[in-house]
Length: 352
Image 1 (cartoon, one colour):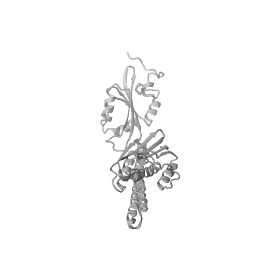
Image 2 (cartoon, helix red, strand yellow):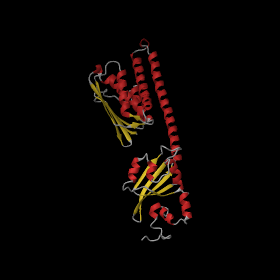
Image 3 (tube, rainbow, N blue to C red):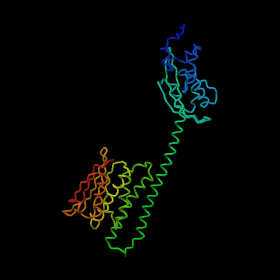
């Protein structure tokens, strides 16, 4: 024989609906109009169903409104609400504890996005499922609008990088048109070739940004590979006997760092091809870029001929060495140089 429910006794019902009194209690006490009004006026859709059968015992007004969108017919079980979510139905029929899911009904006549949480509770020896549905349509609309705005911004930024790259290539083309060998000597020819590769190193940064999904960082393995191959192709004569060894961590750097790094590498690679291996004898160039926590370290070395015994980068007077030193200062980094056995540069403490 079942015992009568005690209106003052709340502990048996607290775990069912989470509002202090259960839907089952209201069914026995229809006079609790105030609680029923609070339940129906809740902005959350609330459904109480048997487990595992899913038969609906009680449903508040908000859930009824949602269910009109979720199902085109009068519903009797919670499974009818989610016919396009088999994984949710499967979970609700098993011995689950809780389950959460985002739901956008395919048969909805209006735009509706719901966050749904389901929890199994036990009351008086019987298992029930409590579903709470929260309308997140406005949030989804805002997110969609933000995504569209961001997509448009990315398209514009990509177009800017594309135009900058094209303009740099145009500058190179103008240099080529004005480059008449009869009008300058060998020193001028070398200056113009160096200028081309410097422009190329900057153009490659913008090309990487144009083709990349990441608009804030340059993929250094791809960039350094493209840079070395492009420089090799611009050096007069054959550079095929020079081995290139690239040991570059899979990291991305900002544009502010990528351009000076690219210009530095351009000077080191170009000088190596031009001066380190007379008559294009066999040789090796190595580039190592490592990520040490919040700092980057780049090592460049070749096994070519040594530098003059008293060579000093600060007083050498060449544009290339002056540019490297200037770029190190721009990066707020430190550089170690040795020229006794080929060339060795170590630039460290580069902020990543």
